[in-house]
Length: 431
Image (cartoon, rainbow, N blue to C red; front, side):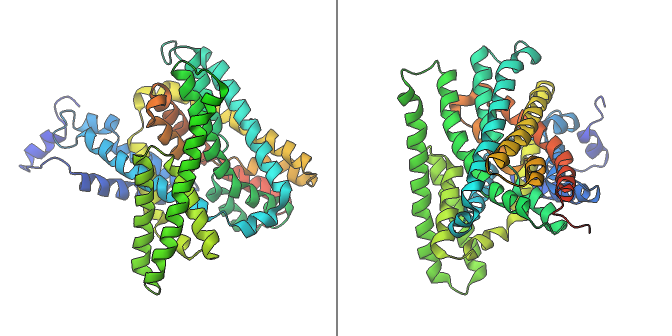
């Protein structure tokens, strides 16, 4: 555009405008995200795809071309929003995931669901790790990551993230086609446990990856000790906050509006304290939600958080789009495609092996894996968390960008595949 940028237009109109504030940037993120989500739904795509894509409109890659002098839009504003929104949104999402793990429901699912969950998680982890660690160095630019250890570390962390399944997309399809039957029951059980399994695996693998990148450790016990200690302390802090919220809620009975703010404030406080102490705040808030829903024998305090779900999701996914590193788009697309292929193959084979081991009906063995393909919030959340870990700094940005690419593609192609699988299994009904 030459020198005829945004400033030239404003000067021509005799309009004097100051720098965009954090409040205005946040408002723009929400507005663009909401619009993108609505537009995505009109084209039959998940709302999250619209949130991510339209968040890119506030990415420095875009704003630098409109306002190269940063006179109006400083990229640091987005960085500030990222730091704030990430912890708030991920704490909130983790609290809701923990609140979905009701003991009475989990007991009713039986050992078969547990075996299917473990196997369908282990196989994609193995596939992603092997493909990224040993194929990645040959397909990525030579100077992308330094040394084979970097690809080993990237494979371990990406493999743990591959365990996660986005329950919203799958469950939405099940509800849409009014699915009923053994496969539907298995799906609901697996997605209830999958994200919790992914978070625990991520914590352990992030510890191992950090040790690999920092030059190794003296013993296996030293390698695992720190992650396990952090895992235990993270859970304990979540348990404390769970009982604290239950106690505080007694003083606000019948005051739903006030109590909703108390829940949100406590969740953010819990995540903030965990992050300040260096704990795994996603696991902390999952433990928080788990204690609340199981000690109260009610979903009331979880439902209050759900009432603000849309705003939190829009803000988080839009800011992820705004923070995407376009300098790594090429290699992120390559690694993201490897992740996608390995995870899809691993989920399908793992689900088939798990269902076979559990002696599930033939239709479950054949179609279950396809219903577990969606990947979204927890995957991006864990990748974001990894990008902020000092020990993973050398691989964090590439990991986050690659997961972003994989999620975008998955969110476009997976939901239709889930619908086909449910209908072909004979458990769905045409609508």
